[in-house]
Length: 295
Image (cartoon, rainbow, N blue to C red; front, top):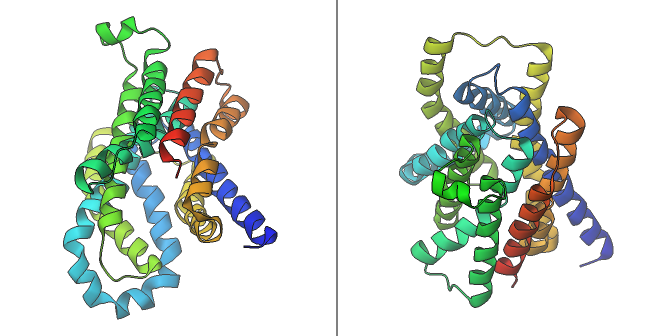
């Protein structure tokens, strides 16, 4: 591997992480003006339309393989597309963008647990120590540094929604790892998004019946285009290239800088404060995950 290949891979991983960090800012900016499932529907609808011109021919050619893969792809789409992002946007209504990104980085810890149960992967002492540290970081973040809040169940609802979203995304990741269908990455993603949109439609329809049609300002349209074309397409393309160039371990380490970018962006664009609890929580989560995933 040449130095230029390593540099390009690292920059792609960094670029994907920066784009993903902006998703939490968008969630906070639009959390009151657009309902969660509706925002998720708009995001993935933009992603689907953006990918369609490049993948529809291959998808049509692979329609038989798609039909055979649907029974295993439906649960993946339900968790990874339909529910995960809607829960993220629900959590954004009552917690900060920095909290969202910090809890999101705990996802690999839940993947370790689920992989042990469903994939029979070995749980080493490093993974156990890393798991304990990362989960302590999540609890520190949720309790605000006050352990007594656990006894009083005085959690932020948004933190709990985001923690549930992280668990569901971990389950989605296990399903993807076990997926054995013979589909190209573009066809797989197009099918996944399309299936997830089918489940989002009735949820968004219910929100429409309760809250009415959302008022889309010019800023909201640009934000939706950002998360649709950026966080849902461009970031995944860069991430896949980074993993191919430098491997998943190094790319994964770069991903754990997500709270840094989200925290800086939230401070600059939303005026959200950064305190010692956030720094301590970030240290526990990222340090634990790095320890758990080494090797």
